[in-house]
Length: 313
Image 1: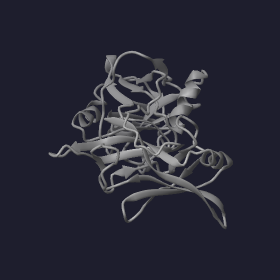
Image 2 (image 1 turned 60 degrees about the vertical axis):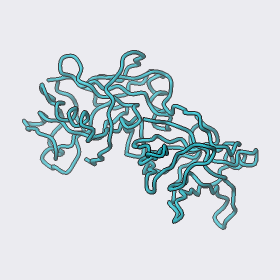
Image 3 (image 1 turned 30 degrees about the vertical axis):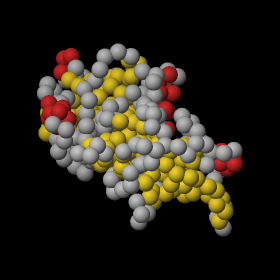
Image 4 (image 1 turned 90 degrees about the vertical axis):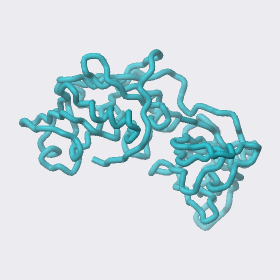
């Protein structure tokens, strides 16, 4: 799995009837990169958060705005965003190029030695002053260590269940995972048919992903599900780290896909025997019974997960 920065195209401020806007090229699909790197993003390979790409005035800053990219007919992916005072100052100060932070989720190398990126996730793009292709690999994950927690076996926990199965979502208030509840999801992960995303609110608020290696799941002692993450350098990821560092209790819990999982309901308790999920919700909550908050962890390794399968509940 790869995480890099790529300086892709010029950016400029243009005036319009509705004010000034930043126009720029995020990335070029279907054309080999310049600067001596034998690399190409295949057509349709680039993905971004549903809320849009964050536009930063410099790397490792908070996004000024978010903008929905447009895939042009020639393979360029362009963006138009309101030119805030900070963005105008950055461009006028010489930062006239866009540096995209991307995660290579799937790739291959041709017989001729060309690296083909088949899927790439682009959360942010920063304004920079150098037009050259930056060939230095740069981790997008923050370096403050990993956070971890556990979903224990046999403990009844508070649940804000949601989904299409009305008898579950309307009546269930607590959830319990017996022995073996995680076998199916871990097997799918091992077979590389499922990827899991840690999100703060929705799919556009990505905290960590198994595709980038920033999120790991494993079977822990006593049959618990171990959750380990190194939050990405996204707005949501930075926010989670800031909350934990400030002493705020942040909880991570899987959003169970009841349509695909095996379960039984007894009163207001859902006992999930075969738990399947594609999202882990990461946020503070006022319903904490049975849950353990995320804690800093700087040692050990978690099982690496791959692939993405989005299931809304």
